[in-house]
Length: 421
Ligand code: GDP
Ligand code: MN
Image (cartoon, rainbow, N blue to C red; front, side):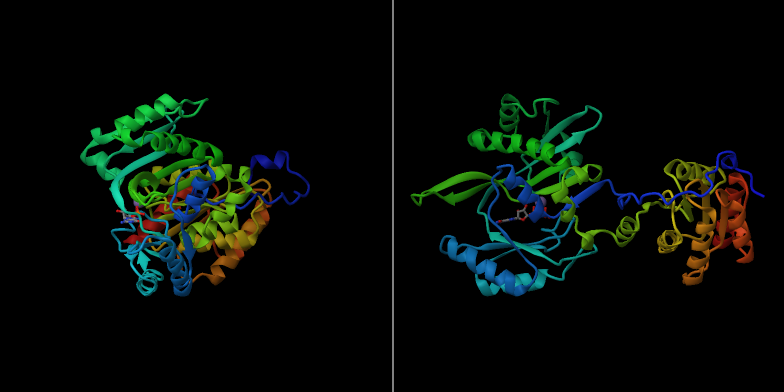
């Protein structure tokens, strides 16, 4: 019989715990450009008008409207809505000068594959007449515990590239932790970027990035490009304005419950399939590079298990916390996620039964194995609540079991080596 500390204070029959809100492993929720722009507009930032379209017909209608409203000879811009950077270079940002051309361009972009993401939606707006592009973002500087504004006069280029080539070209300023970005800080930033001629707009936008960040618990608000654009004023005379042409916002998903409206901006189509499956099943799953799949309950135990796999000479393929009170179907989901990774050649299941019942997990494993398409050696260690029942079930189903965690890790590593050999 397995001896675990829980036999001293085991509940007679553990009540089913409330199911925690489904949470994936991701801590940052990226939202689409169009949604990010909506949040910027709500904070009073200047963003050119836009509409989104899921079909060529919708795109054509939107283009017709913007072309009719715009100056003679004006164009529209059509942009792929996918959660990756560099859409422009990948052919996902194009201009069109007529309704027919807009329909053709939208048709080409919709359905396009950009860095593994299929374009399902495009953004259409009046094309800006760009004079100069800048970069401006607000990020969370955890070390300084402040919001950091980063700007560069080399807009349109990815900031990582600027940081690598000309680190001195990046201007950095911290916002005040209590008061936000103060006027003098914003002015200082604007002058450092060479935006003196657009001072009022630049100050408003820089401060707006910080208010946007604070309003939605974002951890990144990035405008690239922030652009000086040429427009015709009311009298028809040309004038220059500073506007946000692109927007990228990531939200901290731990703070999403504070913003009920934002959860729906999470786009399930855009999540990696494994991330989505994990989130929907209520599992915390982070893929790693190793070969040993780990299925564990509890974050602390999951980390310990990964450490022991490493100590035994193996490399974990993932962090996976099935949570407390996991039922058989959750276990089957977890198994499916682990096996979806082709690098996995052995699995270590380490369950400490408290609220989670060992026999439920064992049933889940048996069910999962019956469905699985790929046969991978598995080592199971279940202690705690209903461990004896679990052991019987696993023995009947001919699973390899282990009683100590060291033993389990060693067996899993040996199985992985055997598979690799
Ligand atoms: P990203 O490549 O995914 O970052 O997409 P962006 O929205 O930043 O667009 C990429 C580039 O396309 C920009 O840096 C601009 O040079 C260009 N671009 C985007 N919108 C417009 C527009 O309205 N007019 C013009 N002329 N160029 C645009
Ligand atoms: Mn951009």
